[in-house]
Amino acid sequence: MNHAVASLPPELKVVNLTKQFGSFTALDHVSMTLKPATFHALLGENGAGKSTLVKCVMGFYQPTAGQIYIDHQLHSIDSPRNAHQYGLGMVYQHFTSVPAMTVAENLIMSRFDSPFVINWRKELSALEDFMSIAPFQLPLHSPVAQLAAGQKQKLEILKQLYLQNKILILDEPTSVLTPSEADEVLGLLRVQVDQHQLSVLMISHKFREVTTFIDEVTVLRKGKWVGSGLVTDLSVNDMAEMMIGEKREPVTLKKVKTDLRVPILEIERLRVSKDNGLPAVADISFAVHRGEIVGVAGVSGNGQRELVEVLAGQRTVIDGSIRVNGTPYTAIRSAMYNHRVFVLPEEPLRNACVPDMSVAENLAFRTFDRPPQSHGFWLLFHAIRNEAKRLIAMFQIKTPSPDTPVGTLSGGNIQRTVLARELSAKSINLLIAANPCTGLDFGAVDYIHNQILDARNRGVAILLVSEDLDELLKLCDRLLVMSNGEFTYMSEIDQLDLASVGRSMAGHQSL
Ligand SMILES: Nc1ncnc2c1ncn2[C@@H]1O[C@H](COP(=O)(O)OP(=O)(O)OP(=O)(O)O)[C@@H](O)[C@H]1O
Ligand SMILES: [Mg+2]
Image 1 (cartoon, rainbow, N blue to C red):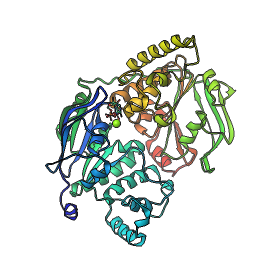
Image 2 (spheres, helix red, strand yellow):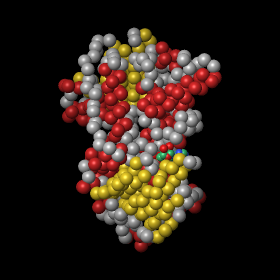
Image 3 (cartoon, helix red, strand yellow):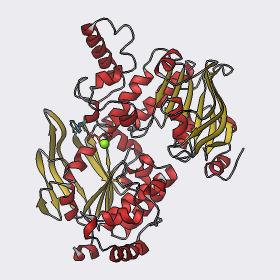
Image 4 (cartoon, rainbow, N blue to C red):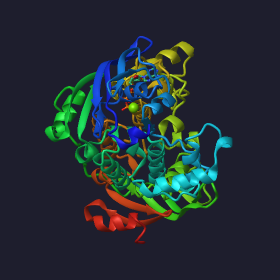
């Protein structure tokens, strides 16, 4: 192993990799090579097989057929632990560190099976040596729970480097990061690659990241390899075309003039607490009017999540008032139904679906006790299924059937299922969306943006909370910046001053 540390990362090559789930072929004779000390991106639409490919490489899934070579040696990898022996490490989309333990404890524990065998003093001094040459620094003695999302993601990456892995696999690593955090993390990895310390294979939907940081791409479509090449030889349109198999003509809906005088959502002096009782939202007041998109920008963790949770009925109000259509609003199911309020929460798999229930059942959640579907069991069953088929086609949800458990769909297709349910409602009055496009491929992002604009043009009042400033600038009529639980900037979109937005996001400005 010591020898490997001093040398280039190994070459990773997969040949004719095939993975079937029952009769469904998720990966069909895919071959690719991750050359030593390169930064490689795996691209493809939602459901193309990207996560399945890397899970086979990491030994989570046993491929149905095909070979994996590390430095030209054939290996069968039967577990992530086994993959680690060959220098392969993976960073997941969700954090795996233990929140109550410190950064140092998490790093040291990752090397051992049992805390009883650890010589803590010796390990701490080795860790300090490692940190002195690590690409980024973290407060070693802080509990992980106190770290911001960007720092937690850095810890996940540091853990893989500390374990001396030379090939790092990242599945949509930047979906939990703001664009500037993403640039910092990817930039630091780029340096490691340039210094021949590391090879990186990253799954990403963001062309901006690909063109800025990546050397080479491999593109999958419907489980098959469709192309690969150097990023310098490819335009964004070339890559997009490979992903979807045709030329794309992105069309963004135009905003029509809407009547902005009728307030739909009115919030006054709202106070909300975090889980630990500390203030999350401090005395905010604002309104969202009919036919208006109000954007909330800000670095994650500044109260946005708690604001959305209150509106979705997942958190209680400490003080202040919320009115919808002029009447007091409690976000319980009947009030949400009566006022036609729809919510697209973050992390839909956790917050907005039942993973073991079918796609059709999850699509019907909001309407299953309402006519026309509530006339007897068979009628209900058929109505739910027919409606599900319609929505699956309309939102292009890739699922083997309406009866498939939603938890087995790819990340982006779970997101589409929730979006289809919430956006397809007949008469929406108020839509609250939190980072609705996380994890969606570019085609789906365009589609959802148009759906949101179309809803606005029809007169829906929309509160859009997003960490993606470009998305907000494209869609909003008015922008609010949230920092430390307060609004620190507020402007109509056509009078916006970007420098002030940046300053107030960083907490250097207040209204
Ligand atoms: N454990 C499983 N059981 C059944 N089907 C699965 C399982 N895992 C994945 N699939 C199916 O395999 C296909 C590919 O899924 P995968 O997660 O690899 O897609 P992906 O390219 O990572 O998509 P996304 O961009 O949405 O994350 C999907 O259609 C999915 O439904
Ligand atoms: Mg995936």
